[in-house]
Each structure stands twice: as structure tokens, then as C-alpha cells.
Length: 81
Image (tube, rainbow, N blue to C red; front, side, top):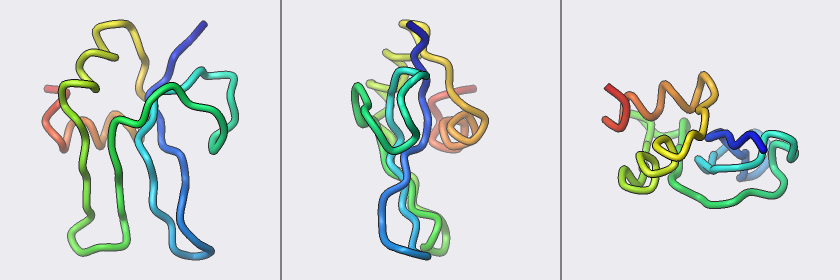
């Protein structure tokens, strides 16, 4: 089973908010996930990024692969070097 750290879209039409989730790579984007590790709101200025560093680093140690966008958010939050 391949586990990914990725974004799941929530919020209304033309008002996106995202959850940073750990999910099986086979599950749909907004579908089943294992754990929520953060939130991302691109609508605010500056963008709001809240990530639980402990949970994120634990999942990375276990072998979870972040997607490109999730990797950018993890770097901004200070989880990745």
C-alpha cells in the first residue's frame, strides 16, 4: 500500500480550502483518508498554512510520499528542510 501526503479540497464553489491529509494513493482526491495533518487556505493574504509538524514528520518517517504541492507546503511550514 502506497501512502501519500496530499491535499483534499473542501469549501464551496469558487471558494477553495484544502485539508492536508494522509491517504492511500488509490483513494479519490476528496475521498477516504487516514488522518488529517493540517489545513491550507489560499484565499487569505498571506495564505494560511497550519500543519501539525509532529504528525507530518511521523508519517514521513513511516514512508509517506508527499505530492509536489504538499511538499511545497511542508517546506513553508518548516517540516522539510
